[in-house]
Image (tube, rainbow, N blue to C red; front, side, top):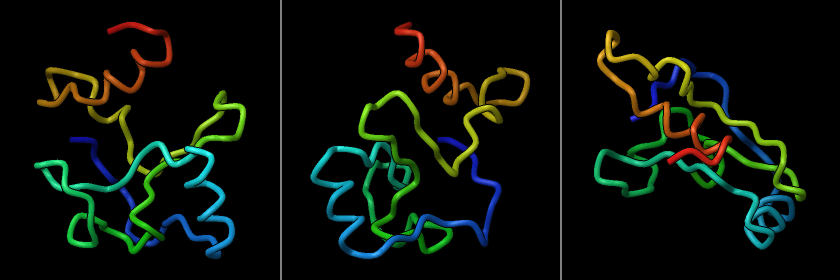
Length: 92
């Protein structure tokens, strides 16, 4: 459960770009509900194809709309964001 802090910001691209991202495996995050179901009911901002994050073709740069840095502290009641940062360093 990664917090979102946006209502206006969203990922948008034409179908050709979206199809290429999908084909290249560059969509790395999608909005989903608490059960992991992707769909418009879990998409807070109308992002195309429920996309919450993408990476470049080299898979060494990514961008995402949710804010994992806001879910990294037991004092805040959520540490789910730590998984994102740990994955960058290959830490389980």
